[in-house]
Amino acid sequence: MEVKDKIIIVTGAGSGIGRATAFLLAKYGATVVVSDINLEKAQKVSEEIVTNKGNALPIKANVANYNEVDSLIKLTVKEFGRLDVIVNNAGIGPNLLKTHESKLKDWDRVIAVNQTGVFYCMKVALNQFLEQGYGNIVNIASLAGLKASPNNISYSASKFAVVGMTKSAAMEYATKNIRVNAVCPGYTESALLNQLINAKPEMDAILKSVIPMKRYGKAAEIADAVVWLASDNTRFITGQTITLDGGTSL
Image (cartoon, rainbow, N blue to C red):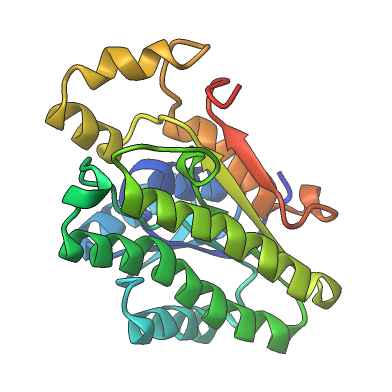
């Protein structure tokens, strides 16, 4: 993967897909800004990367707060002189309620992080990319942003939005040497999936029954696709959504 010496921010990098992505980027020689709302988790990931002879810097940021996003990117540029790639991974899960039962506060919270947070990160990063003349955005969407996902209205809405924002921005900046792509994971081993199964244990068998491969994805498998899109190996790819779901969408 051609990411050596790139300066790359990964949001939500304290766990799950973000953590796996940060480690893989560092393995291939990128300098990773490990960002998470939980500074302790970000520091732990960063320390593990450095222990393994990689380069990393932990920065706390709540992507639902525009000022914190602005500060994250400004601190990165101040420290390293540029920003090559941002991976917008930070996200939170659904509350598994039918639409009419959904709580307003839950809707607001999910949209604030998963949709508005991605917009904030894209907006600030794009300003930096335009100034330096290039850049690359990789958004983490979801299979729930491509197909119906019942009892999941806020999460589904937010992830459909991420897919739409990815395509719109890709069109806007294609002539500016700026690429924008997304990955759409299916059911993946993560805290979000654990939350779902813990709430409804019967969902484990139900979910696996609709996955042709009969297993969940692994964070490292999603990270492979993210790092590929972040690399110079994909210089002619923009506006795409790569689905990693074990065949579920079939």
